Length: 252
Length: 252
DNA sequence: AACGGTGTATCATATTATGATATCCTGAAC
DNA sequence: GTTCAGGATATCATAATATGATACACCGTT
Image 1: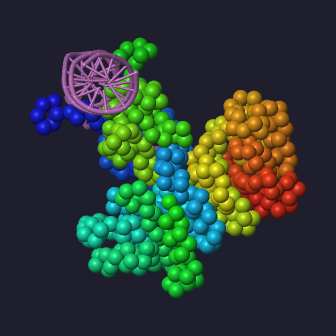
Image 2: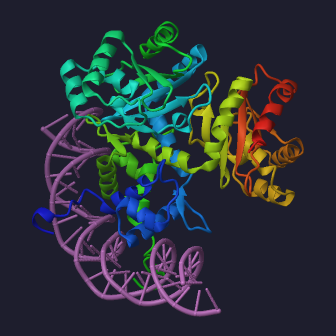
Image 3: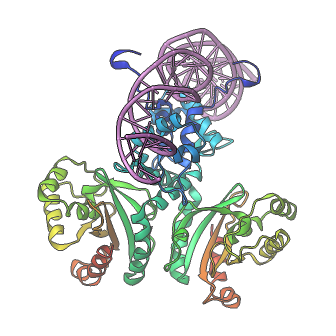
């Protein structure tokens, strides 16, 4: 191939297609037939058939013998295990998260900043809550979470402003804050206080309080506590949770 | 291609090579240079270079700018998230695991049987423990775990015997039981009692107690409690943990 | 300064992955 | 019971890709 259509010989396009198949599954697509999978992955039907069959034979996708629909297999969890071993910050954080959850008796999570989102790498639920709030790997816009805002609060003002202007937002509840100036104000407030609070952003009646982890270079993680807005008010949070949260976040 | 070397047109070999690269990472290989990665994946150096570069561009591998070594990226967690949404049993189990952990105040896990191993799909640590015991995705031989034995206890005697004969074992501690007849005896005992106990198998001083989940067809999951062998004896376990464990396991 | 090992860049081409298409199967509608 | 539409499976000819080999650059060690 010549000119601008020259082949990129350091990129394996078949692998990219393959990963689009795996990435097609998620909260809203838990099992898919071939046609749906092709559509969700944006691929040709024949390619999807080959790729799905390949992943099935490799053990990454299960195929229902009756309905012929595909869904992720347990090997997906092994990939996550590899990540959890490779991230020194997650390894260092886990015992501290366990201690914190024991101490305050509420749900504790570890959020990592990844581009303009946060992704939960550890979830220590204290009591029953929505399933989405108990499993790792969930991604949410940084601007809409107390963790994202806490992490950004360690950036300088110019960069905070730029991030708030450019990064995406998403409404999860009627209470999700979509007002960018207000979000910037909350981030600046977090820079003052050392923690950030978000109410009803991802779940109704859920209050998230986060403190950024200061460790090695640009902050990319925060510890978050999650409590019920029905049983906690701001004063009580500041008194009973914030000191321990900040202590833990600063102990790295 | 003709004859027995005929191309398998439903299998994408490049994708298989790609997944070997991702699967090269794990507890003992948290970050790898190209040469190490090629060796671990059993691939040619050039192929490894292309595949690693591809995964890096797709966001699945991070590359250290200084050392040029690769390691898994956060997107691995998103793949796990997809699995956790797609497994109805894990979704159904989570609130029950949270309740059980609250009730007994000890670590609670959900183990899934996958071929001849168990893989942890949910981990609810109660107190500080080894990192390996707090993260999902870890795989262990079914025969060496209380969960594997509990699940097998629901199979008929003939199949139990066959599994104990054929499935692999692995020693983790000096206390890991490697005696197949003895393991079969413990599985039969679990069939009588409805739960299985394993001491010092994966970790020293750790006692695992598991009850199989009876739900839809062949049993493939168990709920496990993990306690310290230093503070619990068998009588106390039977009195204070087993009833709640079995109640939870039977509530599906 | 020399050398070995690792990572990067490039090459010619064999082989693979491709999109198109034919065929089969199944559930729904009539 | 028959027909039909849609989804899944199987197969094809070939364009394009992924390949292993190899040259080169760089860096740490001796």
